[in-house]
Image (cartoon, rainbow, N blue to C red; front, side, top):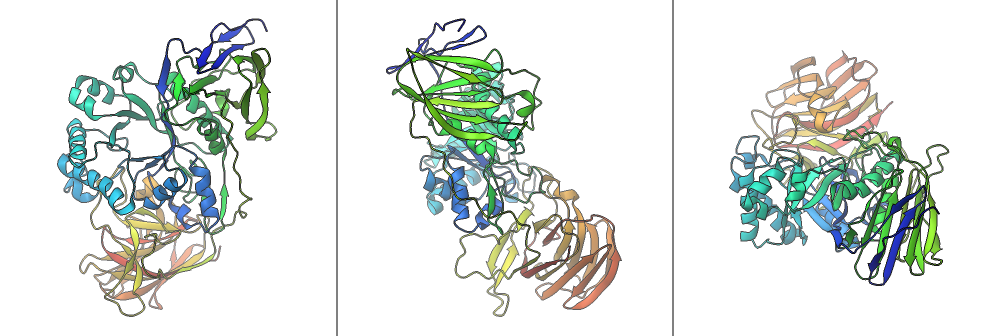
Length: 631
């Protein structure tokens, strides 16, 4: 080799030096001290019910998915997913739990779409949620955020810290502001009380970079939401690059993926943006995607509390390297050589750069290093993920290895890494064309939501209807009665979707019960074509009935494009059976078996989910839901 390295690291008996062919030296050295403490890699379940379908998987597939997921070191929750937190703790008792509000109950804003007008009420709500997690679920929340990607309020943050402390929750630390580096960094520097209140500066999608003001705060820096990228091999390359370079470039000691698992209907926004995919509980099929194995390159051979070396960085010929030690004799090095086009994330834009193959020589005084390898092959599609290859023997203090492009390596003294696996899950299958749910559950169901329904606005939960001694004792009820303090412009109506987005011709039937005497209104729908943050503009065929005795059929959720309307005779607190049939360009509907109209003409959309919901945030019940898909 043309040059020999000059710097070495000693970590309780381990010496390590590296040099690179092509005339470049890279020293790993602890003589100037160590770097920042590693806080972990995590996944975020929230921002919409991103883990919604996971709970519906039958065993053993559900447990297999959970086992794959919780090798990571964080679970970042933005909601009610108590079950998921408990399952994470079973598999990893040391896992860190984080809560971050996206929306707030309407009463927090007291009629305003703003959580800071009454900061004492908002702080009390958040602290009550944390106390409830412990009291009712035996879960300790470790960190809490402010408001996802929205303005922060210094007075509120300080009051939240005060309320936490007053409630005996001094151990719960605050992350702020889950948006950009500024203005939170400058405000923290200028405000000593705020500086004392905030533990972590958390940012979303930093592009691996930080700003001088953030470093000046002396706070821990986290990429508290990142990735959000389609989980094919380019997505795996994105994840590999940012896991290293978030620290190399930005001194961020934790990276949290949005989202943890892509367990929601495929055609909702940001489909397959999880570390793995589990979107077919009806078939049992799931896919362990490349980001899971890229995560393992770090999490299998380090733990939160390990320390980065200060001498980490970029290879001259592209790629990056980090090294961490437990300061008890163990050392782990992770290298990545991902090329630009094979590691693009959804955001922010990635400036161009080049990576070429390079020969790396490591010099250390020891015996063997365990070696784990991933190679993304975009030409022949023979990708290799997280394989344990032959340990490298150190001969006269050195060994060499060729780093090709689009590779990830872990070199480590840790010997207990493993690539867990299960038998292949069942094959993929579409949603059943014939589907029924009478919502009858015995006792207290473990899950409050009915299988496969995905609430887009509102909350639909199992309900025991004690006023009905007959066939409608067990129902599904929409329970949100006040518009929340929203993160995006959610719909003014509640809606829950189900089924196959490719459905065209189908019949949907459901028993409905309006509880609001004067303003009640419910619908069933087919060919619903949008959800998530754009649900307000969804199209479809919506059959509405109202407590004032009218009905209408609309081509949109907000009820503006009317296809048919008339008198239905419906009123509140009476059960009715609605049936909606769409075939080709024609739609028909029945009320209790009698036609409301026939062959209304429609043109768009051509396909979409089935759905049900209410005309406002109101109490209403649903029972005996049935689908027969024709095409």
